[in-house]
Length: 295
Image 1 (cartoon, one colour):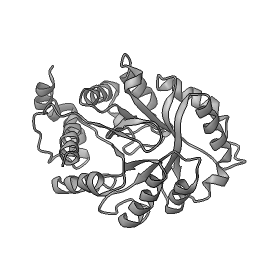
Image 2: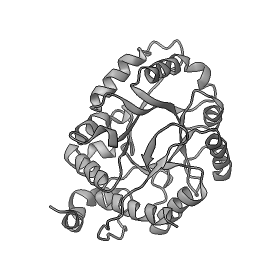
Image 3: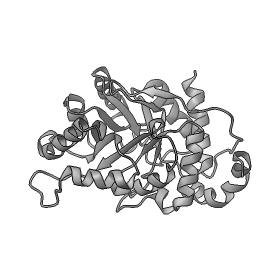
Image 4: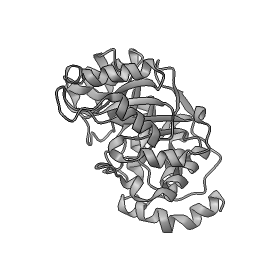
């Protein structure tokens, strides 16, 4: 089935469920053009990534997410469609259970054309839940069907002292980077102080931060967060945006447009991860993002 036919017939079926359940049923489905997602430099990490990453963690926890709950076939169809349209960046996490799904979806694709990012859950120093970083990372690599991750993040930092409480993981990540199985390291931030530490800590190459114009599910006002990320960008750190639609709270047509316009034309983000759940959502995002990026 070609792309146009799928868009016309498939949305009411497989994709229709995710559209209605996420409040995006009002997307105006248009036939996809030849527009492809471009690539951008991710700070001074040496990585060049697609401007949009395929997020895999919508309502993600306990090793599952909306993307994985839709099943492997739908997941692979989404990933391959995105790949054809220039989305070569896949955002995973151990707690989403999405690594095996991405691993199967990318089978046969040239690894050098992909950017694979995942996140490892971490614990405070002294926790009896800690296991060797390399052991966890080897399992994650196997699940994701890759010899290396382009980006590896410590997942969901909620305190500003992670530079002290996560030294075990920081050392393990640094060793993985030295061994060539990780190219860049960093943190996903869910707290203002954690983000300040990410900006100031030279260990951190990449910051995944919550940012949207509605200040929904964020760690400060949009201006304060954006200014802080501007400082990080000046230091050469790669800045990736998440919660672009306020964790699905702002998905009306005009809100999607406003959110993407802010991310692309006003913010200090290099790129963004979007938790798309259907081909229609993906095409809508691509068309909007690339139109705004070319202004």
